[in-house]
Image (cartoon, rainbow, N blue to C red; front, top):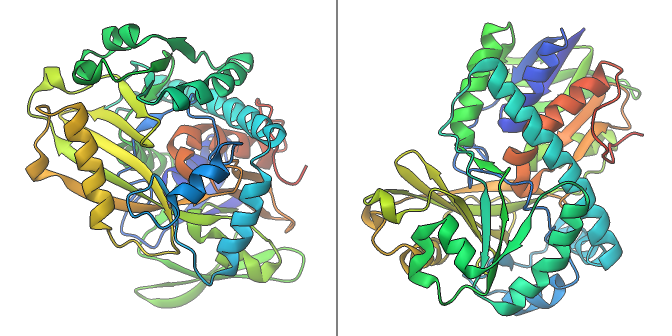
Length: 417
């Protein structure tokens, strides 16, 4: 059976890998010149099962109102005459009830735990390296209110197998001495020892090379123009490359185009509530290794994550809902650097910082679409938001099982069932 995977980010590449392991003939189509060059290029680097509290939670509406139109806000809704944005926002508010929040946390934890285990197995099987570190993730709080609000979600995560333990400020400093400069500001912390970090771009490119060695065909520099159907199923993909337009066919198709997924399938009657959340990152050369963190950190008040990637410190976060622009906002870039200087004043070279922005495909619930669509031979692997790197291996492995007619090894609300 031949399968075409649409998109070569971390989601598309992991899907291609697990599909090939099932024995399928796999072709990957990508508009860029290589794998992992858009949203997967410079993300926060965390494999964070512990980052399972969705944006939509009981405390979110008040925060969003406070942050509205504030340029350096962690989550910025820049209101537009955009029907998809308004529909997304209304559903976001519906997801903010305690019941919906609990349901979504369970989905995200289950998929995350399964995905982390799948990544670890893949690493053992292939020897793949990508500046990975297995030192856990430490969430720290400089706001007593934020810390108190984190206790119930952490409890739910523990109920469903994510060992996110509440610890004191002193224990946090013992785990990560680089936080010593703000030790008196830390109200509390949580620590998940099983979580990891690593460079998603390196991982995606290295896994793409392994896929090619296993026989996966890659069509880079190939733009997807549309899907053709006979009303019941997809009959082909219309693409354009250096030779012009052509139609490519397969038995089944996997949609892994991130934020660009909804536009491609809307003409087919497939309605995906995905909106681009523009995230930012800053990558700093490390000057003093002992003063830079080696444990991956999450600064919940500022919605930033910190990951040590070899001799670099990657700092990423914030979200701007403002359409499909990838233009860097200087105010938001400077806010990241300002926080780095507050936390690790002598650790990095701020004069050689590299800023980046990417469009993270967010659903209102933060739960991705994985599984069958209403079109018989079109499968979904999209809408992973900020957790694409965390959920990639589990999503790809589960989808491969579904497409092989097998039951995935994770309790998750797959589409089409």
